[in-house]
Image (cartoon, rainbow, N blue to C red; front, side, top):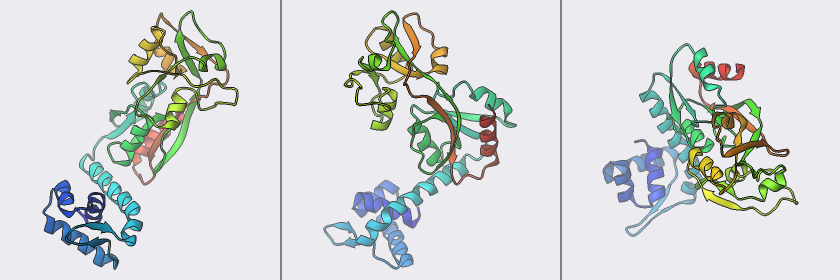
Length: 276
C-alpha cells in the first residue's frame, strides 16, 4: 500500500476504519500512510474529528489524479506479476476473422481473454489484465492508443420472410436490447447512432445477454438486431435473413493498447493487425 492508495480508500469511505478493512491493513498503518502523503505534499487532505472525516478542498482537487495514479500502480503490478506471454483481449465473435492470421504472424504464443463489450475490453487494458485488444468501436478510449484495422458493413438480422428493406422500416421494429451498456453503445447496437428527424420512435425489444440469445429472439420473430457482416457469415440460420440496409453505420474494428505501453510484443501485434 502506498500513500495514494491509502488516500483514495479513505476519500471513498470517509472512515479510517472501513478504509483500513478494505485495504487489509491496521488503522494506525493507514493513518501513517495518509499523514506521510500530507507531509510530502505540504497540504492537509482531510478534516478529521472524532465524529466525521471529510475531504478538504485540496483533497477534493487531488482525488481524480490520485485515482489515476492508483489505477496505474495496480495495472503495473498485474503486468509485472504475469510477465510472460502477450495477453490479447477480444470479444468472442468480435475480431472480424482476423485474429488467427495475426496470431500466426507473432513469433511467440499469446494468451486470450474475452470481453463482452468494447468498454470491458478497454477496461482490461487500463487495469493491466490485458496488453492489447482487437475490438469494435465505439468504446471508451481513455488512456489508450488506437488504430483502425478495418471497416465492414453491418447487416440487419431479421426473421426470414418478414424482412424490411429500408432503414426506416427496420428501425420501426423492436430491436434486441443489451442490459448494462451505456447510452452510446445502446444507440449503436440498436442502429440508432445515425438517427434523423424522420426516424420512427424507438421500439425496445427483449433483452439478450449474448449473441446466441439475440439470434434466437430474431428467429422467433421477437426482435431484430444488427451485426458486422463477418459475424453474420459465421452464424447462418434458416430462420434469419441478414440484409444490408442503406444508411446503417459500418462496424469499425480497431486495435487498442495502453498509451504508456513500450512492449515490443504489443508493437508486433499492432503491426500484424494493420497488415491483415
